[in-house]
Image (cartoon, rainbow, N blue to C red; front, side, top):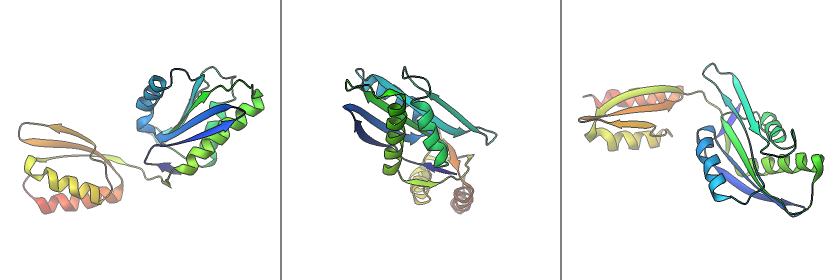
Amino acid sequence: MQTINDTNFCRYEIKKSIFIAYAAPIKEFENLNAQLRANHPKAAHIVWAYRKLNEFNQIVENGSDDGEPKGTSAQPILNVLRGAQLVNICILAVRYFGGVKLGTGGLVRAYSMAAKSVLNEAEIIPYEPKDEFIFSYKYSFVPRIEHFLQKIGADFGEREFGIEQVIWKLQLNARQKEELRVFLDTLGEM
């Protein structure tokens, strides 16, 4: 299985219809969907599809044709995601109708091509399962912890700023978790 870490986009045009496709990590789906609807009020359709792993490591898929004929838009995007064995990713495609009907076959090809094109722009990486890791430290350690998290390629995650300490809630793969444990042991004083 594979995934992506960053949001990417591309523009694709066929028979005067413009498709603007976005590929993003699944955690960005809600915000990206809302942002695209706000930024593209005149778009004819905003189609989306995603594949993600649930808490039992089962693949969950969903999609919306957003008014396009059933099976002509979200399904082709899902098929591209399946073919590339991608998980924890969403693709959203904004369509501006160009006045020429594409037909069902044309829509399938257009949405498939938009999904493939945006994935060509993305850096596809191997999927690594991540687990939650929670710890807390005094404020004086925050810069050193942030620097170390950048060094091992981990997000800062959620932080709760208490009176004397910061509580960190991170999603880490096994390697990152072990490296962070060793680093925190060298810091001492919790």
